[in-house]
Length: 324
Image (cartoon, rainbow, N blue to C red; front, top):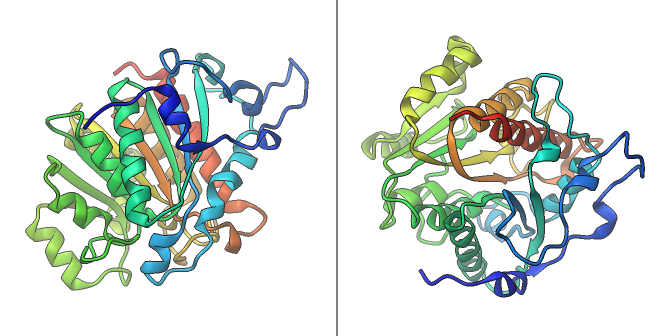
């Protein structure tokens, strides 16, 4: 894949809305809106880049509830109000150079949007910059994976999800990403799906997963093990390989995240996903994080968007304090 430089990347994006960068104007009470960079000339000094993908075409194709196109800015609204301080760690997020690139331009077909996203992710991973991609539907996982995978000989994908997302990929949509990943020319060393629930997946998709070596950890299995014991066990599965993490917000129970494309009464709790995010940042060699299926149209008091904002902060705190 050919590379391209900063000016070419900027041309693919709408800059973030300045009004979303919250500030109290108080140097003794900095917020993420004070810390995250919104303008740069070069990418060389950036550690993390935030990318929004405001489209829900993949959700519509999958007969889901539209509205995920509003998610990137909704997450920003809450993310930039939070403070960078965590009581449990010496290093604070003021030390991490985070740049908000804005929202990818989403004109054209879903396939064309994916092609642009793949190019951007590829370039940032190549430069050693960690992209955090906020969708949008879960169809973003496939182009994110391709951009990631083309930089490494071996790689692992972890999908946090209620669903396996292994639907037939004749026409890509929000439910086909992980089948596309398994059937592409850059097959992962391992695909791990965690948080998978009963009565949310077909036996045909489960059989396909088994036949193709997918490692599945159901919600019941995670709870039986306990979250920390489960994460320690999962660490053995990953073993330092470069990792793409994909977080579908519908993996979280409805009471903690009502604003998703496909909601379920049970699921991981907010506390559990925050622990997962922190642990992944601390212990896994994560090269790409994407977050999908947040649907502000159906949210309650911004509960789901706040959860995503906290998920990102926990993950970044782990990345900053990692000794891996």
